[in-house]
Length: 155
Image 1 (cartoon, rainbow, N blue to C red):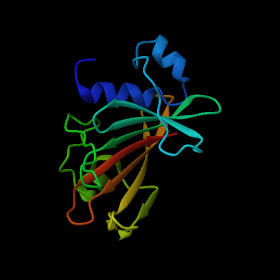
Image 2: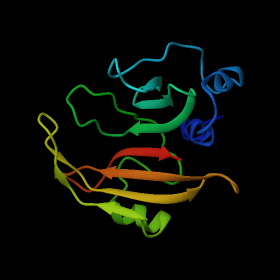
Image 3: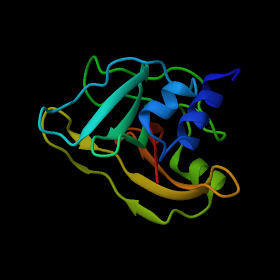
């Protein structure tokens, strides 16, 4: 792997694999998983600043890769490296549709709970990460300006 974008794609390709297999294969380092909430069914691996891998506790399979480009909360972690798939921190909604085609699902901006405020629009695309491995790519955009806020890979 020679760029951060390559590592992010490696994480996305690993969705569905078990935590220990990712450690054994050198995809992730053997470090402690954390829980956002004590009774949550999900554990999180902080890969690097602004990048979280979420594992389902029952199977310890990787379920999602979240890249936070712009944090909603003050002092939130943000990823400042290179993004995969032709994306960058200034990618607009129309540019994303140009890259991936029409979304399979869209949601317009909506009010969020305090202290988050407005939550920007969201588009879901189906992408082929390999010839046989298709994922949902969920992009959220800032409510205030038309640029990426988060990039999420899900099965």
